[in-house]
Image (cartoon, rainbow, N blue to C red; front, top):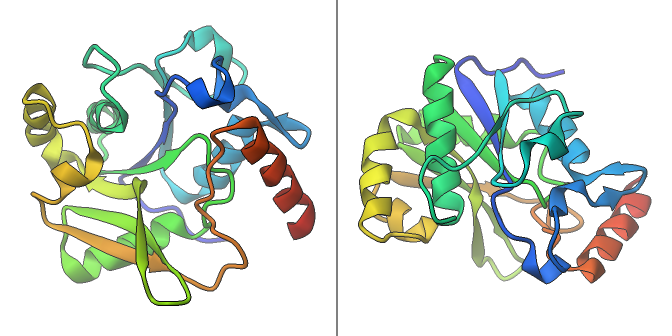
Length: 210
């Protein structure tokens, strides 16, 4: 079992509206015999020193999961960057200097995600490191909701949100940002669930990996 990094707070991003899933709370959909959120918690919790869920839904929905819940600290449901900002504020209160973010609809992200992101950060001295995968032709695909972020960027991020920046990559392009490349997987470990068909595919992947 790998040692937990000190000073890294995990932030599960679940602030979306789940419109392609037909509405409701996507994180509570069943994957196998448990909620999708439960699978994500079990995967991330061993990798971080503290853990929080960012969601704009009713916090009572998550009372059985045993972790704190925070809503966006800015109004208007401005997307994942608002969740990153909210996670930074929470992490700062816990004494953490970094946050590691994952999406609540992605159950198979790497079990060494945070360790690999930190390894690249230590080598590059970057403020942000995002996860990427590489296809057979060598093309990189960035997964911007999976990364580590310096809490010191909180004020800059808040200013950018107030100035209309919504897409993660538009903000990270302005910063000292690096990528950690994940290779050697039988399927995309950052496969995310947006539709009922995606959920069925995730169930099939679960069976194939058991």
